[in-house]
Length: 394
Image (cartoon, rainbow, N blue to C red):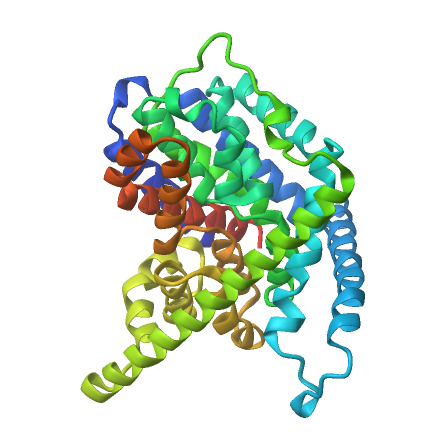
């Protein structure tokens, strides 16, 4: 039954993408098939084989060790602070980790490790699927640098993109997250599902976005990895990485204050008027989607509430609400919802992406503003596809 539900979910997602397509005759169904099969193989290897399990465990341990290194710096700076009931505040225990992971990311970029990996992985995807290399590259880059960094990595190509290619680049970038905040995620939801969602999101974003806005590969397009390297020395990379990480931590903290406060105010009004809260309302609205993803019927309202919170606010707010529920939910619900949460598909990301494109080319920003909601809808569909594929193997 669960497998049939997953198949129904995939059919509905692909069918919706087809109906939304602005050029149905030019949809690259070969790419769609290849990407979906690749998703199934990737999820199966990572979740259902001993080799995949060892790889996941090894990577998770690696991130755990990175977080230990990060905590050394955090404790040096914040040592001596007194905390109530020995509970370290979220700002220190989670958000400050972003500073170190961002620094590490910056160093790996400067020494060309990440740019080379992204270039060849993106190039491989483009050759196998026939999709444009620039969009394939930016989508892979988004799983490392996030939506803003991925678009900046192909900034010289953006002014030349037509509407469809721009839609693919922006929408697919929204389906992923920045590697600099993976450690923070892993403190709130199971690490294995964070890691599985990363490659699946790359494929989900490309699959659905390229159906909605088909684009053909162009001869002669090349990726220059030097465009990704902006630092002049290893020390500049360390300094800029740390500063960028602190900015991200500050932005996340500010967003959390804003959204959690607004949700509290909305819940106060809803409780007074209707005796319910926003999470419950969103839970009922999105419960059918949660069920299609593989969540048991008894837990689909809870899952839908977490999903809705993520869409209207952001993944951090949703993860903070979801984390206390994990022990009370089934393994399948935990896996599916965790995978769904690992993306930047929310309303605030529309503004972030629009602002990034505006900084690169104002004319293209005007184009992006016209399909902003469609971009979010397709990116959310991609998160549903990723979660559905994960659910098949749990």
